[in-house]
Image (cartoon, rainbow, N blue to C red; front, side):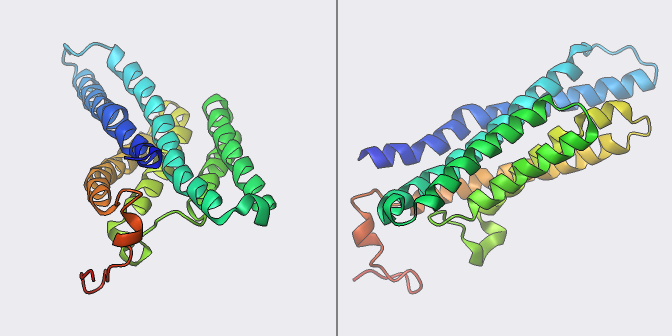
Length: 231
């Protein structure tokens, strides 16, 4: 394996070793927090410790940053490869500078979203973070499988990242709202995000099977992918 092949494995390795176990912990704490809340509401003495709610929030915050970071890493690798392959630094330096600044702005917006207290600032930074993710994902070099968007690792990942950003932005509203409207919204979007994460695991494995090693690419890409034949 060449260095570029090892770099390709960094994204799935982080997902398997860190992000997916973190998802399991977040789901576990979410379920425990809900059970404790229902038991308390029904005046049942709960054996679930009160700390589960705080741990769920802490793990959820960490999950959002991890998912967004993993997404940026996932799109950053092919974008960098395309810049090097097309020699964009000499052909289109403004585009390269724009991409670098966009990465920095997206990360900065996420950091500021964590720190923002006022509703309008959280909305602004969440929007900027989401825009950065989407625009970076639209850059040349990123494999999107648009013809099969409903089964695309890229679209699942972008959608999950946006849902995580939105979920982070509404956390303070959950605690302020006495009608549980925001809590229900939080539950619905994160249930959908969980299904996307499951899809991510399946589509990620499929894509790893389809990506040839660097020295194999010139030969594999000569194949007829429609008729599934190689000369």
